[in-house]
Amino acid sequence: MNGNNKNNREKGRPHNGKQKQLQHQQHGNKRSPAAPSEIRFDSKPEKVNYCLAPERLEAQSRAMKQFEQKERQEEIERKKQDRQQKHKMMTQKTRKGQPVMQGRLELLYERVKKVVGVQ
Image (cartoon, rainbow, N blue to C red; front, side, top):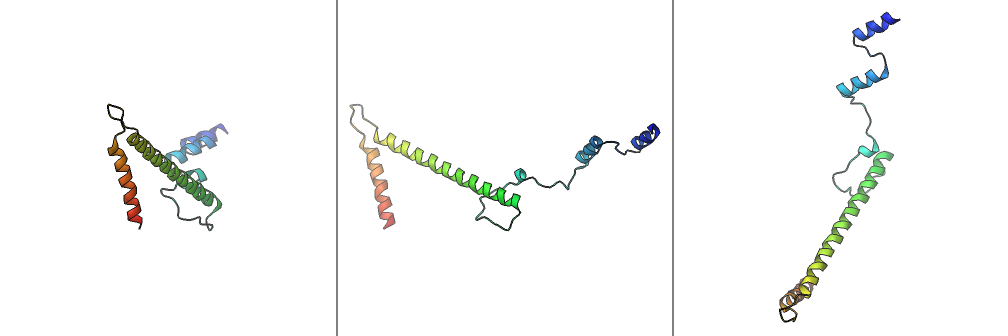
């Protein structure tokens, strides 16, 4: 038997599973199926496609939730920055402690532009 194993090793044949795995890694095993965690979406899917395989359907719904959550976070951050900017303009004071009217008038002008633009 020892002679047989020696011949197999000399001819480049693997004698156990570990060597076989190494060969697949070196030569690239192209037949491995994609795991659900590997399925990626670059943009938000428009709607759920129920004709997909279960793994793909789950990945698509996860991607939709992630993109919606990201959009909500961006909207929250934008609103937060707007509020901070308005607060800063409204709380400005002169050296004597009087409110600066320029910022208040700009905010009022923005409101008027919105109303006129809508009508």
